[in-house]
Length: 224
Image 1 (cartoon, rainbow, N blue to C red):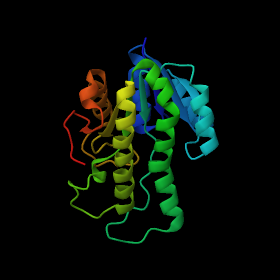
Image 2: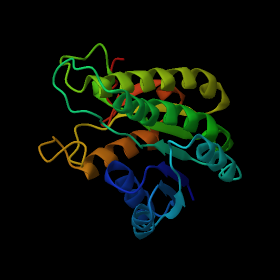
Image 3: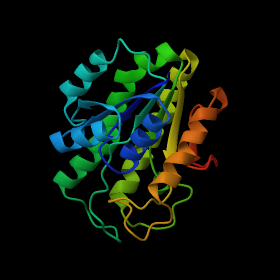
């Protein structure tokens, strides 16, 4: 039975990963910050563990807590968009800190903390990024703080892949598509089930050739 860890599992893409993997009989562990979020994870059929990804000590303790488990797939999904601006508007310090700590610092800490457990299973580590973080594909300045954070986490995934790949981990940065979630909005292109089903197919087939790649939810390779 595969063991799946979903960081940020209480809603949206994370909750759908939890539902789909649980429905197929995997042993799923999902994290959330609030009591309500933990209840949603349990209702989806998973073991629920509390975790605030902005708490450095909590992330380190969580890594130690799961160190005894071999994790086949770790999905780092927690993220925030930040100010929804359509121009080059200077972000406030609080906005900048929240977006960068959530979208960059937390995944970097989690990749390091979870690596031993994923190495044990020679598993896969997926970070939910965004096409908005691609510098070569960028055609708009909208959400430029979010774009900058996703470009930064893409670089972190690539760097991690160079160290963790030889240890047996496949590291992937995913663009989940423009998904109808609280973040993506009602006018987005695809529903959350389509996005997650696609990423799961990619993860199921992933091998060392996928390590360090930036992939669309349908498996298409994207340029950094």
